[in-house]
Length: 330
Image 1 (cartoon, rainbow, N blue to C red):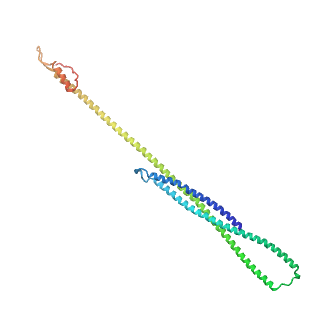
Image 2 (image 1 turned 90 degrees about the vertical axis):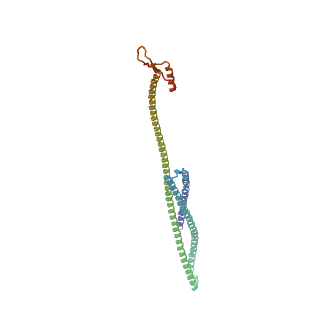
Image 3 (image 1 turned 180 degrees about the horizontal axis):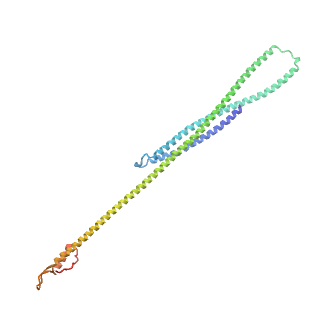
């Protein structure tokens, strides 16, 4: 029984050590969630500073809210399991102390029993030697009286009561040791289940947090790519619009230039016509009627007096010198 309790104490010590290791991992997992939570909150604060027209509830904002909720939920679950683990460690330590106290008591009882056994063995040897001596000298002893027999029967009765009480105490002691052992086993099994649950929880919350963080990262990258694409498209559309405007201006300029060319040709043609008409009029102005000579018919002739006046009149009218037209004599 003592060996069984000692084995149970060693098992409790191992269970306490493993549970404390699990507690350390839980606390590390809880502390590891602080940095991602700070980063997620900072990103949400930064995105609140976007321009007013860009402050829309997009998939990035939803994913960040989901990530933050996952982090807070993981911290809450880890804190609950940490509290349970601490309580389990305390319960195991209390049970270990109880087992150690029982081991100490039983060790002391065992030492007393061993001492009693050694003393009883020496007493039995003395009794055996005395009985042998009495049998040898039995013929010389007086006969026993009735009172001695009554005293012997009373002593036997007391020994029987004492033996019965010792037997009952031994049974109770064994039952108590069995109960203590079973209670320690239940504590260890509960601690083992809690450790397994804690390991599963750490793996689960870590997976949830990583999935949420990965989704946030993907959404932010998609949003950045979308904005860059929109900027490129807008830039391309602006370039196309500018190109179209330039093309229209160029076409308008071509049309205007063509119109000017046409007007220029019209003006040149009109100028030629007016110049020709002017030459005709000047030619008419420089001529005067001449009387007939020697029986010839009268006809217009160039007047030397009219010619300078006609040229001067042409210069005043045109603002420039009029090219001299060939003088035509009729």
